[in-house]
Length: 214
Image (tube, rainbow, N blue to C red):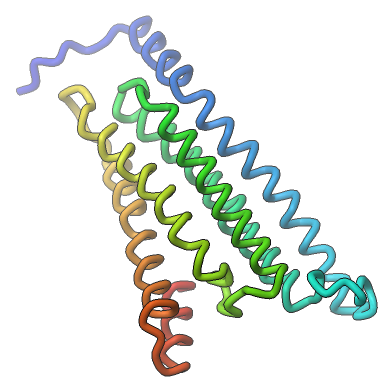
């Protein structure tokens, strides 16, 4: 039997407000920077789409060829917008469900800046012609360790937040969040290791990419 005294509605509302205040800057950072990358992705997507029926459009700009713009568009959408929107939702949900205000907002913000640095390096690398040509893993080899470092910091914070929660009920959604946060680095590390560190037969690379995308 748990000895935790249920909070009154007023105490519960105050706790939720305190949690929201503690995560206001990290959540807004991920949402606003994600929205900025979404705008970049849309712009690159429009350029790529235009080139499919007007190949002469910006044909004299080498870093805006279709083979560079389309991968940059997809990766900006996935890693710039999608992942950061997910980060905003995950850290807020984990804190709310753990019923514990965040005491490491600076760490999360630092991880967010490092993540955006990694995405920027990756997109610039693709446009400069250093992309891998592997769908959803087009970033040059130097970019993915930066993303992994930033992601690892957010994962560590999430587990600490879960660990220091007050004694009491654990929501099943918290287990799902933790499982999802462990799933991505597993497939991301495995795919990038097989493609960049242990390159083998092209069929193996194609299989690794298909496995990652699935």
